[in-house]
View 1 (spheres, one colour):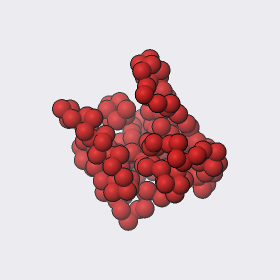
View 2 (spheres, helix red, strand yellow):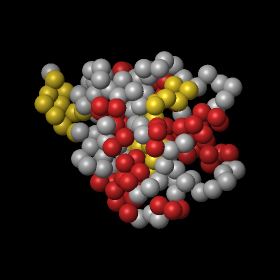
View 3 (cartoon, helix red, strand yellow):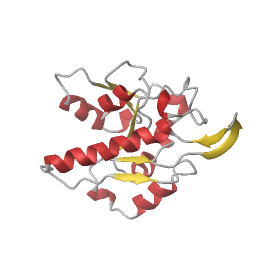
View 4 (spheres, rainbow, N blue to C red):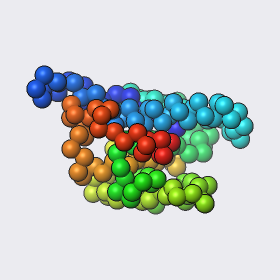
Length: 181
């Protein structure tokens, strides 16, 4: 499970604010990784080793995840779930995530099977022209042959807060984050 904790930093000011905090991109994902780590630690019944990773330097070329992927034997990694921007309502409504590179593995289908009987759904990435599969930390492990996908809710084509100083906690839908986790 992964997310990135960096953001774009200091940008042109809007009023007095010049710091792009990245509440959705990607503090929402990091909060999910921390929550999942806590959950699985409490369960203490994992069938395999689970890694929980917060990467740096995603915004400047996935440097952290690239270094991380070079330290691993891809044959020893079953899958990677990268959580990217889950603080906004999904195009598919509540209780829904889309999965970048959906068609490159059966990971999303397996996950959908595991939530059968609930209202939660997983969908193919609705923004193929954005190339989101190649724009986040999942890409480095996917290139090594690992089923590695980003799970997201952001409506990237109309998110007015994306990469701005306005990406603040007050713009997030906390219920959406909890549902996604």
